[in-house]
Image 1 (cartoon, one colour):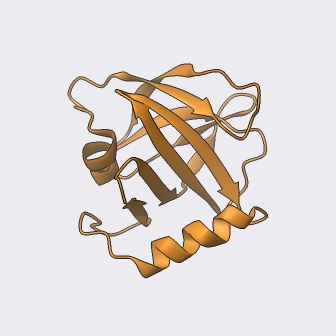
Image 2 (cartoon, helix red, strand yellow):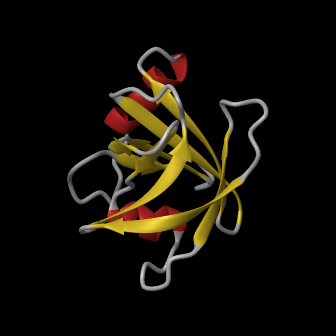
Length: 128
């Protein structure tokens, strides 16, 4: 495990059009994304489920006591699992897996089988 990937149960709100707000737990922002939430950067995100996707610059947004980032995923359903892959400093490819995708079962198994020492309750997430 290289630590370049994050898988997590998804909690999201529908945004405008085909956008959704993904809300990683605070510990995931700190441990995986390595962002300073006092001075949040923009992230470059590319949806790898879309062949023609180009990286999009996205701002981190504070919503109450949670931080979120907007992603493009027109067919997102719940439950879902997100996978992020670090490609550079504040640059990530991502996939959203619904229960209809075979990758969902593999990610679900990892989330249920491996202990995350940084997890403090709530939705499961794992750096792999």
